[in-house]
Image 1 (cartoon, rainbow, N blue to C red):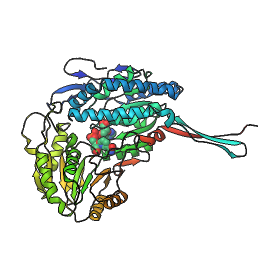
Image 2: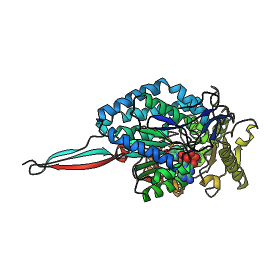
Image 3: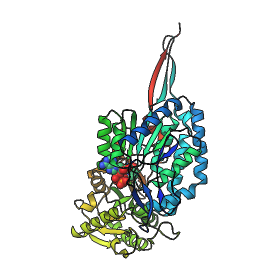
Image 4: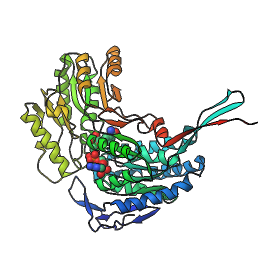
Amino acid sequence: MIASKSAIQELSFFVNGKWEKGRAEALHPVRNPASEEVIAEVPYAAAPEVDHAVRCAHEAFLKWREVPVVDRVQVLYRYKTLLEKHHEEVARILTRENGKTLDDAKASVRRAIQMVEVASGMPSLMMGDSLHDVAKDIDCHTIRQPLGVCAGISPFNFPVMVPMWMYPFAIACGNSFVLKPSEKVPMTAVRTAELLHEAGLPAGVYNVVHGGKEAVDALMAHPLVKAVSFVGSTPVAKYVYETAARHGKRVQALGGAKNHLIVTPGANLEKTVEAIIGSAFGAAGERCLAGSVLVPVGDVAGPLLELLIERTKAIKVGDGIEPDSGMGPLVTEDHCRRVTGYIEKGVAEGAVALLDGRRIGAGKGYFVGPTIFDNVTPEMTIAREEIFGPVLSVIRVKSVDEAIELVNRCPFGNTTSIFTNDGAAARRYAHRIEVGMVGVNIGVAAPMAFFPFAGWKASFFGDLHAHGKDAIAFYTEQKVIMTRWF
Ligand code: NAD
């Protein structure tokens, strides 16, 4: 639990239904990115603390797997009710530690609650198949059984929603779970663990350890951890995929992105610009589904950019907790420096800044305003690398086919959207594009909880995607039983 109710909260690990202090003396500061104030201090777990959490989770698993699934989901019903009750409170913690606007934070908590709702249907979702008389007097059926201890490692940008892509499904399937949230935003993980405990989950079924690489390495190497779910940047996703697989774990590792938004002549410009702004500048561009490259086809570029610049200028950048803020700060000072570094590189490589977010004024907070670059070429750094900030690069093309080639040359393949009134072009685009999640006249094509979520290529390492039916397959082992009675 949060040890101190003073302005700076001292966080602990949640293990076996109790709050435990870290063994290390040093605590690490968590800052409110809008004010730079230290709001919490977090301990980082080393291998012995991870081992303790995993062993407790394993003990809990041995009992939890015997609880009938209809009883397991009762906890999730109560958890959903508690999350609804504390929706605003959790969203406020999220805004304080992450920076995104309160409306955006609330929407992401809503998405998280939907994961709990879908996982509550586990009695139906976990059902197997059966067939009588597969041979004379022989019947066959399949069952799904939980794996054991599952581990989750999550990024800073969706501190409530991304962990809930994982643990409600894992737990409902009968597994126990150890979450290692992002050390940049550990506070919402603490509050949501308190609520899950309050919902009546038996001790040890859900555990939280904080930390960075050391904790992740210890989770991946632990013999009692059976599966690892990771969401974060591509280099770490690849490392986790390879390392956990080498240790014999089942792995799903969702990575970074570089998402293209295509606009054809004839698209509804009002609606398209609204969607582009939400996609590129919502959550200050800190979304794996954020539009990062705008690709106008033919002569739509002129009117599109004119309207886009006008509307983007109206975005108010400020503390996400203020009701009139349209965009909050970036998560940390380091990240802010990284994003401004990309803007500098864009200018140096010859792109034309139609809007330059560095000119936002030097006050407190890690703010970078919306930035739009025109005359970007596919070779430029800003067109190739994930920036993860409010920077939109415009690459003009002559045809939808040229756009398809451009997008398919990109090593990432998380999401893309096409804005058009041409159904045949939209169909061709959706069919030929080598990307995992495609939007047609939708700015952020985020699959809902009952559909699977993941990209292709360098945006995903593994086989089974997050949530949807894939989650049940990922968090269970399938068994085939053949029966004959004499
Ligand atoms: P990150 O890769 O830096 O960190 C993610 C997690 O990995 C954190 O818990 C962190 O503590 C841990 N970690 C960091 N370095 C590690 C290392 N060397 N070894 C082991 N563990 C390590 O990512 P981030 O900055 O927190 O999040 C932003 C990234 O996440 C972006 O690239 C974004 O595209 C991606 N993301 C992807 C999706 C998706 O669905 N594909 C969703 C959200 C975020």
